[in-house]
Image (cartoon, rainbow, N blue to C red; front, top):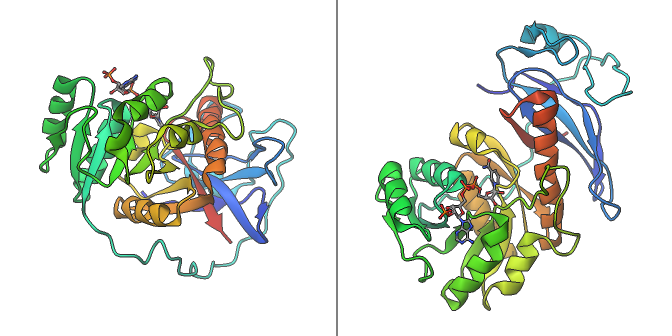
Length: 311
Ligand SMILES: NC(=O)c1ccc[n+]([C@@H]2O[C@H](COP(=O)([O-])OP(=O)(O)OC[C@H]3O[C@@H](n4cnc5c(N)ncnc54)[C@H](OP(=O)(O)O)[C@@H]3O)[C@@H](O)[C@H]2O)c1
């Protein structure tokens, strides 16, 4: 179901433009400030896009009809944040054309290393949208079972051999990601590697990575000459991805050409690809994963997705 209301709570000023980073929630409105480290030029803020149904009222724990949530003042989940009524919002002008949404979608072979939850969610969604999936896993039987489940000509490749696809999704746990890329070695030369990992600490209160040393940057250091790393998908829950509804997806990487290819792929999956910048921004996207889990655990539930609105 498409969003039926947008609550604009706070603003992020970035490179002279004003944007709102929002969370898409099946239910009630959420306002949230998030700062991702001292180097991070501004505060990243969440509003909410409400997508119908009812949701527990955060304070009372009672179901609340969506129309009440939409028309009433925004209920802030951040402690101490005053809830102020907003004037009605004028109709928005159409979004300016952006290069990512106007490019042609090319159906292609996508290689996925891993055969777990995210390999399933991404592979299934990509196959539904016409791509052919190659699965490469250390567990060949599991990869074959997943290929059979995904269908649409999905194949199983040899773990460690050169992938068939130009885009290779590294869908393994962060603890194994660098090791896996090193294991493939030159077989990944010239490939676009999509890093989807979330290097969360044990209680998901922070990351085990540091600024300048995100998993993506570690993968880039281990990857062969000519391979390009792009961070994407990490701030989307697999269940939401599997719903196959339109979504925003943040991505970051150093190669403009690789990013254009990844953006075209993402958009072929009915996702709006939002470029966060160079690979140094992968660390920020890893924190966006923490933000997503924080929102989910503190009232919004796991059926949510982050997004951005350009106003
Ligand atoms: N689940 C989500 O909603 C979600 C959302 C965004 C991002 N992510 C990220 O996506 C990645 C995959 O998550 P998931 O939920 O798909 O996990 P998962 O279901 O546990 O699957 C992990 C996959 O990685 C493989 N693997 C792990 N360590 C490996 C190693 N050292 N060498 C080779 N293969 C290895 C596993 O192989 P075996 O089956 O042989 O163990 C399995 O195929 C993680 O980094 C996670 O942070 C997950």
